[in-house]
Image (tube, rainbow, N blue to C red):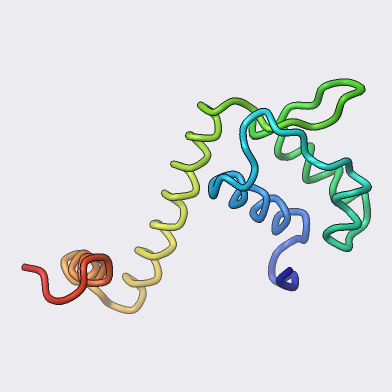
Length: 122
């Protein structure tokens, strides 16, 4: 497991890792997440950190808590929305960074196209 960054709160990094696991399909809609204690051991953090993660994921609509049963991923529609949101954020980061380096929109588009499809594209 990769170490946590010092630049962002740990709970946020864990949320991001769980969201990426959902988007990759490693966690599926309706699946029960490990208990707070199990997850805390897995990530090597305080259980209060995982409680915050689960609260934030529920607030975002990614999970739902079923009393006495645990925390579960929500439906496929919400997961599809999450996929779109994460994709948009990743693209925004790429565009922002490339624009900061002075690339024009056309250069960015050409670079992405070349990267995806190889070679020179008109």
